[in-house]
Structures are given as C-alpha cells and as structure tokens.
Length: 246
Image (cartoon, rainbow, N blue to C red):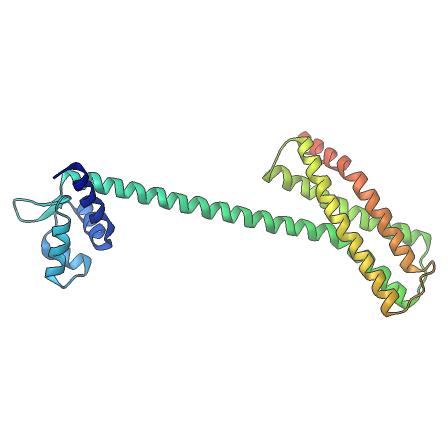
C-alpha cells in the first residue's frame, strides 16, 4: 500500500461519526471488547459494527485477547483529530467572544447617545409645550433651558471619551477626532429634532412664525449646537487629563 492510499484510508475512516466515536472510545479506554463497543456506540447490528471496524483497519488492531485497541497510526490519527477539534472549538469561542464584544460596544454606544440626547430633547419638548400653552418665558428661563441642554450633551461627550479610550484608542489626538465626529452626529440629530418639532407646530397647529417660542427654540438649538461642537475638543482633552491624574 502506498503512502497516499494509507492517508486516503485514514481520512475516510475519520469522516464517519460512528468511526470517530469508536476511535475516541478506544483512546479513552485502551482496549475494548466487541460487545462493549457495540453497547457504547448503540449499534445492535453486529454486521454494521463489524463493517465500521473493518474500515478502521489501518487505525485499529486486535490484541492477543481479541479486544480492539488503537494502532500506532490510530493513536496519531486520534491526536490529529483531537487537535483539529480543539482548534475548531477555540475558533468558535473566539468568534463568539468577538461577537459579544461588538454587541456590547453597540449597546454601550446606544446608551451614551440616549444619555446625550435626553437633556436637549427634554428642553425642546418643554418649549414645545409652553408654545401650545401660550406661556411666556423669562430671560432666566431661556438661559436655564440652554444650560440644561448644553451641559447634558457635554456629559455625553465625557462618557464617549471613556468609551473610545476603552474600546478603540488611547491616543489623545485620535480621541479628540472621534469625539468631534460623535458630537457632529449628535448635533445633526439635535437640529433635526428641533426642525421637526418647529415644522410640526407651524404647519399643523398654525402657530405664528413671529418671535414666539418656536423662534426661541430654534435659536436655542442653533446656539446649543454651535457651543457643543466648539466645546467638545476641550471637554475631551480635559476629561483625558483628569482621568490620567487619578
């Protein structure tokens, strides 16, 4: 028999699940009788089990007592098979861990986005309600509304800095670029929210386009967005410095 024929028989033997089960059983127990093999693999058909053992001829041999055991080639084949299985299980675990890691990233980022937008969105909804009620706002209230939305968005930037440094990069310049990209995306969402609320009020509720709460809300949205974008690099750098200090 040539080396190629021998390899073909080995791989053919390892292909069948029953044969792999027999090989693993022999590897664990050393020598096993025909009856014990039949019981272990759950094959009542004696002829079928004999056929599988015949196909395993290069890998399995009979001892002087008539029991079956692994040949030297069989031991090497089982070692190879177990190594392949270990590698496959390891790869599966790595893929699973990487998938869980990315799911964690996405969930955490969604949480940060929600935290960042909840304050400005609450302010916009409050101003919208005031518009419907026809209530007037004092200068102190307007400033307060601006600060609530602005500081709420900055708190989201602080959380994003920790997120970015944990998952992606610990370089300050990279963190600043990432934070500015995050801030730009959030600013666009905030502007779209303000625009949608204002358009709804003006078109559906026929509210005047003069200097009312709609105009105040629009001005607050623009000012808040501009201040947010300008402050993000400074907040990112300050957060990193404070984090390193402690």
